[in-house]
Length: 295
Ligand SMILES: [Zn+2]
Image (cartoon, rainbow, N blue to C red; front, side, top):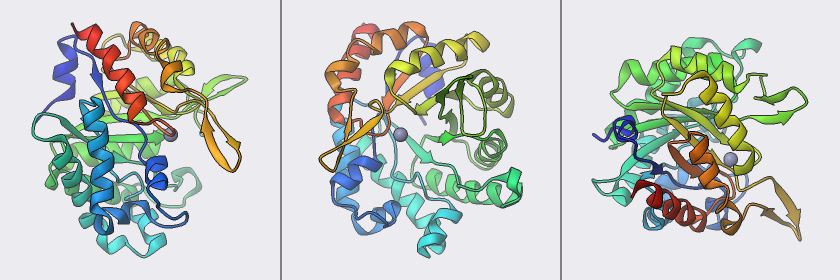
């Protein structure tokens, strides 16, 4: 078992990996189909993504399991296959990571809102528990509860993982810049997130997705204002995408992020990777910079 927080506590920085969703579409995933089903039907394509990040220098490899909860899988009538899909997700990334690198299984939000009485806390807990148990079975070291926006849903996810597995728990929220500062869809600020996630027992916290690497510098500072010691991960989008000739173009190229990554590190990020629109080329740039800091 690799513990990310143990490594970070020695002062070492780590590189995580880049986008999965946008990469799957590049590999031919038809829009409207279930990305996670590819773990069972397109094993080699999913393995290729994991391996390309491993080769680009990621210390931490994610999994193709962002939407592998009961609620999203049931939209494709795949809810009965939840455990198989999640276990295979972890196995694929473990195969790519080898035994020395870290496998961090992805858990995205369910899309259900406790505040709207869509579901109960137990419904969420039970789905997150099934996912986490299967990830551990498949050889994951950690879970990354990511792109979250609501504190009550995050609490259920963190508790479900902590109480039913020995996986390390990472939790990251997605913030948009508004007139009132950085807030999630549910109005949570980086400071509120930090206080709450630490109280729920998250081992590592941070932010992902959003408007790009540049805006994350401010978010890192806000998190560090509340906690100077919690291990902090940033997985940013490659900027906000714009549509050009029917294609999504991301503005923060590997070249552009070269000057931003050192600022993120100096603001207090311990682990850096990418989200939507980032590629193995972005990860290569991050890994080279992280390598210099680790010398
Ligand atoms: Zn994203």
